[in-house]
Length: 81
Image (cartoon, rainbow, N blue to C red; front, side):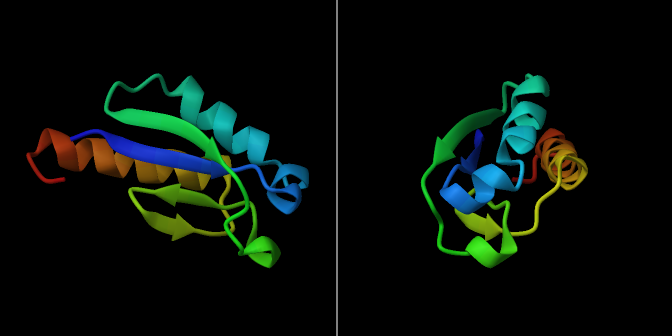
């Protein structure tokens, strides 16, 4: 199963370092993830935000994103998606 990471690039997330999240996701070079950008998700006060497999995640950091991606990759290897 391919996981989808959408990084919000609305005005507020952009100034709150959404580009760092995009760089983290792209640098992982994982084939089980599709990395995309999206417009404002409407949770501006809690940015930067992402959508990971259709679930909005707020107050993201590159470290938190790496942890989530590693966790999902580990589960996928066990046959759990």
